[in-house]
Image 1 (cartoon, rainbow, N blue to C red):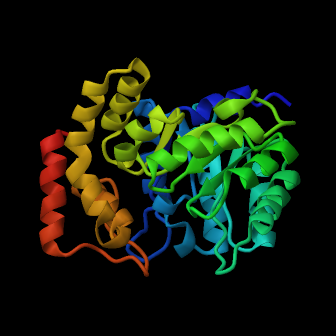
Image 2 (cartoon, rainbow, N blue to C red; image 1 turned 180 degrees about the vertical axis):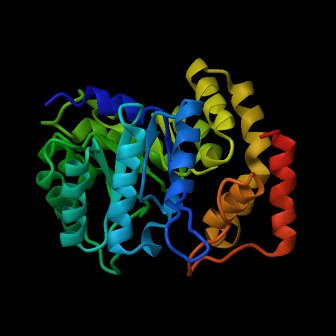
Image 3 (cartoon, rainbow, N blue to C red; image 1 turned 120 degrees about the vertical axis):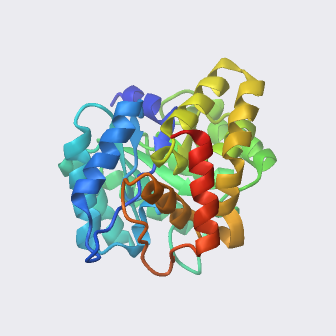
Length: 311
């Protein structure tokens, strides 16, 4: 099967949309459609519903299915949809099949939530999902530094539809060697040898993208893009052009915002994004536990940043 189209979609800004909630706590479907249209109109061409910025773990099973259906319906042929799936293996497989039935072209497999993860078990988990949806591109989400390049290489050799990797271990030096080793050893798959066997997506967003780009990443995920898509796309353009100065300029503009998101072990990662969207009147600031809304002082900081960007 030719996965060239979905591979190209990963080498881009991979937007992780928020999931807005209404005053009664339910999904605000109208706001969600409007947020997606805003992303598409800005030029975003790859969207991941049920990502961490979308509060994947705080949604009910029924809500996760609904978010996928709403996304595919709104996006149409304007972008590729990469659906986040995970939790227990049966749920991940069922969600992946639902994604394909709904019209998505890829699934992003969340890091397994389990206190005991072996290399063989990680490969088996990912392979079971990939084998269940052979017509979809599959993107493992690697956050655990204990996952080895050899484990990924074995998965790539077994599953040609594992087309990309969302890499979110905060170590650019390790990433570079990991990408080289995994790609070189992933024989039997599509996309050639070396790091090009997989499309590498920098999974720690904009501030990490330049360093990971040097190691072989050609795309990056973004929650910021919900708020200021022009900034995310400007960074991508600078990286593609090899313009390090322009890339640094974008990163400096967004650094205070991303530092607020990363503070206290990313406790307010989603809350900061939703606060910015609330400042813009695009959705409510509400997040679900175990996240929480921001205190007044931090809200003021977010509002000042948004005003400074001229969004």
